[in-house]
Amino acid sequence: MSDYDVEKKASSSGDVVTESVVHNGDDGHMHRSLKGRQVSMIAIAGTLGTGLFLGSGKALSEGGPVGALLGYLLVGLLVGLMMYALGEMMVWDPSAGGFIEFSHRYVDAAQGFAMGWQFWFQAVMTCPTEIVAASIVIEFWDQNANHKAIYIAVMLIGILLVNFAGVKYFGEFEFWFATLKIVTAIGLVILLLVIDLGGGPTHDRIGFRYWKQEPFNNGFFSVVPASKARFLGFWAVLTQAAFSYGGMEGLAMICLEAANPRVSMRTAVRAIFYRIVLLYVFALLLIGMCLSQTDPNLLQANALSTGTAAESPFVIIIDNAKIKVLPHIINAVVLTSAFSAGNEFLYSSSRSLFMLAQQGQAPRILARVNSRGVPVPALLVCALFACLGFLACGKAGANDAFNWFSNITTLGSMITWCGIAFAHIRWNKGMKAQGLSRSELPFSSFLMPWGAYVVLISFIIIIFFNGFTTFMSHPFDYQSFISAYVNIPFFAVLFVGWKIAKKTRWVSYEEMDCSTHYVEDSVVYSKY
Image (cartoon, rainbow, N blue to C red; front, top):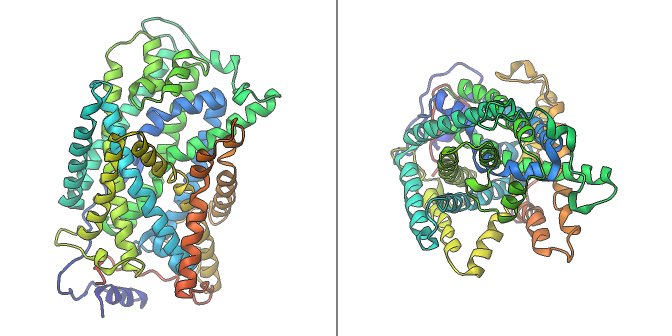
């Protein structure tokens, strides 16, 4: 009998038990070393980086100041609902393998397989993307393109060392980088407010000038009438906002390694609200107040898409206000943000591969854990994929291939969000069928379970229409169309393939395993 089974049986009895798990031969288990402050900061800052510091400028040009604000606010509320749904399941059973095991347990083993591999592919491909983004950011200071491979190699080695050191050091590293990002974001918001009120060197009191001039984008893709252009511009912001919020669901990957997970995960999920409101929505509000959507510097930055601070709407606003030095500081923060995001995605991809192996949906060796709690085989496999970042240093064909691989992961988060919402809906129905009350949950939201329905329906609609601009291009942009929708058949092939191969069946509400398997202060051992 494996250690995992011992823990599961002890907690399923419903009695108060103490941990008495017999260690297996190699003593390989996950270490619950992530402190509450680290989990909370990772939840708040998370993958905060280029989505806010760079991508917000694109949202402004597409939707206008009001359209961008409403788009980020709407998607932010949907993501917040999704995190509450995930939080209820995580706090109920923090010993489970995140949404991978929840899908397996509450829906169908085929969905757990499809969601696990889809999330792994999304995370493992985003890791080299972030590393390449960090190397491009350095070009703000070093224009020599021949040095890019050196920067990629250095940063790749850096994130490997952090991950190999163990979750204790990973958590501390991410805590301080998250603190830096949050302090910078708050500082920029305060600076933009000062500039808007006329406190900059130019003393130009902007107020709501740009909101009055053109609150929405009346000229989106030269569409007529203007009302249609305004709506399509707003809709384009929804997809951009979804990409900016992408990666929040990765919080579930640290559930097995968080100390006192029921308390720390509950606090972390609640902290998501502050990240959405303070760091995204309020920042978009002030960017739209301080910068015109038709500003020539913004349009040029979006067209060039440098990936450096020169593309940031914050830098454009600061330059317009005649403030010096700050662009270099912002570029340094964008650099650390990209490096931190690459570090987090390497961590998430290795843990998702470990969880898949625990479920028997990946080779057993990937579930092996060393004495520091690091799933070394899974981490090495993910590190090999991180080396794809060197494709960006090759000829045009290699670079295009890398960009294409990166683009097909962009819908991954929204598909995962739909899967989480669907698992939560079925979990609630299963609990009801088995006579379990929501009052028994250690963490619950009054917005659930109906919020999960809103998340599922809303993101299905956004996914379906996310590539609408490809049909407005002349000639038809088939490459963008493929990258916009290829995740859907990819997920379907995984789901149907596993269902046929393993002859899995839909989990009935009566047979659903709705019990919690968590024993206080217990750890999760490798099954193999």
